[in-house]
Length: 92
Image 1 (cartoon, rainbow, N blue to C red):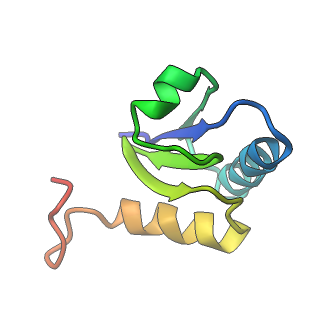
Image 2 (cartoon, rainbow, N blue to C red; image 1 turned 180 degrees about the vertical axis):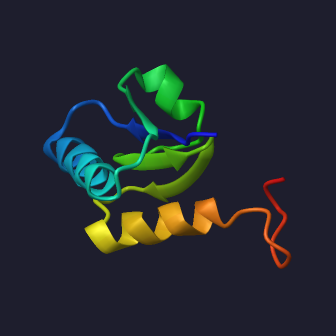
C-alpha cells in the first residue's frame, strides 16, 4: 500500500522548501507515495499543528515547525516502511 504524505502549510517559503525536499526524496527513492499539500488553516489545525511547515506520513505528524533535511525525510520513510516489525507494531 502506498504512503500518503501531507505537507501542512499556508504557502510560506519554508513550506515550499519542505515540499521541494519531500518531492526530491520521493523521486530519488522512486516512491509511489501520494503527496498532498494542505493549505487550509482549519485543516492544518485539525492535526494540532500551530507552527508550519509540518509533514504528516500516513496521518502521523512527524515534523512540525521546521524544514526537514533530505536525510531526515529518507529516514522517516524507511522507519515507516518497517512498520509492523517484530519490535514495533504500534501502527498495525
